[in-house]
Amino acid sequence: MAIFPGPQDSVFWHDFESLTDNNLWKDQGPHSLHATPQAGFSSPAYGLSRTPKGKGYATFTGAANCYATLPTRFNDVAPTSFCTFVAVVSNLSDKNHRVFSSWNEAAGNYRGFHYILAQTGASFVYQFKGDATLPVNITSAAVWSIANTSVVVHSLNATGAAWTNRNGVPTSWAAGAFGTAVHDAAVSPCIGKLVVTPDYLVGRLYLFALFPFVFTDAEAKAMSDWLRDRI
Image 1 (tube, helix red, strand yellow):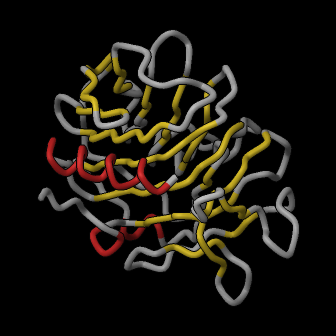
Image 2 (cartoon, helix red, strand yellow):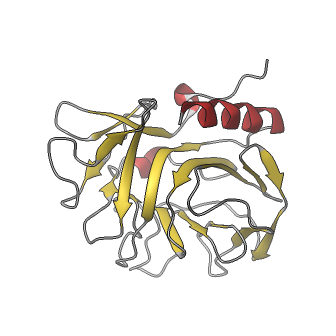
């Protein structure tokens, strides 16, 4: 039986299951990067809900202040080399989906990460690095339904690797090449929004996690199977 990485192996693991004592979205990872829900999420749940199976999730409406921020400590532990994003998403609108950003767009120095899923006949994941070429990792085929739930695993490395609902998806760099990431210690990363630009996620997140290494094919498929069974 294939074993897949868990919260203990992650940079952060947000499963939207619970709040901390001071009403932050609890990070299950080793760095306690709990997310602060903004004013678009009201008490007592602060944006968290549950599926009929009991799985937690957060709904992002695209409204102003409907996002969450991570502490700037993320930039101290964020990967600077190969890494993997895992997202479980549904109810996406037919537009670009700003899932995560630690990109210092205001400074124009392209520091940090920028993670977008797009439904325009193809599936995209963007990774902005510390250089002027803004390399983009792009998958070559439509790999999820806007209305249905999808488990998306994207490993960012020299060639790129992606799986959606356990199926491998071809990847390539559309611009630039993989390079060492540079992080800006002053930036508060956002889940569901770009750091500065008011572009928001519209959809649900059931899990969002980042790992400081590339998944194997067996790990990606095992995690996909486990996550899909829980929703």
